[in-house]
Amino acid sequence: METKELKEDVIYHMSVIGIENMKLCVIASNRKEDRQILDKQKTCDEVGMQIPAIFTDAGLVFDAGYVLKDIWTEKVLNREELHEYETPAEGNGRLWAYLMSLEKAKKDPTYKPFDYIFQYRKYPNAEEFKKAYRQMNQYNEQTTGKDYARDLLATNPNEVLKSYLEKVDYGMLPKAAGYATTCKEIDKKEIEKAFTAPVDKLPIVFSETGKLEYTGLVYEAVRNAFGAQKQPNNLIKTCPLWEWVAAKLNDTIDIKVETSKLVRMFENLNSKDSKVLEAAKKEDKKSKKEVITALLDTIYLKIKD
Image (cartoon, rainbow, N blue to C red; front, top):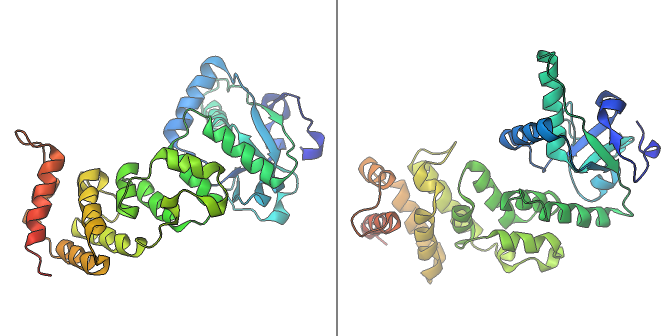
């Protein structure tokens, strides 16, 4: 179905149109996590789609800076290939849930897929689309800081954001990822502010690229020390270790020298100390964080300047 055939303020039913008769692509940075899709499928199976999705011209979405992928092949599309394609501005998760329900119906003849419904919306320009799209995400109660960060990075190649998101995708808690990246927490509110801020007026934390060189070296040394290149252990995943590292880098008068010392500390970490750190837990009146901090301090004092 061509975009020019779609009209605004009309509710379209995929059960009538047939998804195979549409050319659809999705924003690559939009989330597509199995748990969320399964939850949406279950809800739509039970009560249907209470609110229609919103489709718009894929070319405009591309012009707004987003990378687009065909829903069937997951091929990244260029501008010239987007003729007749539509993209869900809202309803991406439910679209994947609908595709999942169609697959389920192929295997189970007694199962009837829910009806995916949508409206077409024409935006005046790419900037207006981006603004509307981000507002829709902002007021979606399931939208996380990770989702905001991924969307921001899709149209803004910010180095702090990129490094932070890589750590979150690796498996670290967002708060820990913030300390490991910038030596401070990057909270959801700051990412939300960046959503509507001009590129040159992002929150200060996203312009502080000076520490990335140093935090990156320590981050890799820690992962190597614990043999955790593919996924983090609980020590790396959580905050105590990274808050301790951040305190060292924030308090030093020579961050280059301090980074070198921290890298050497983790490069020379013996198996006994690494096991003790990984197994650390609350002791008597000491919290787990206090126990880990004390252990790190003891190891640190053994490293020569």
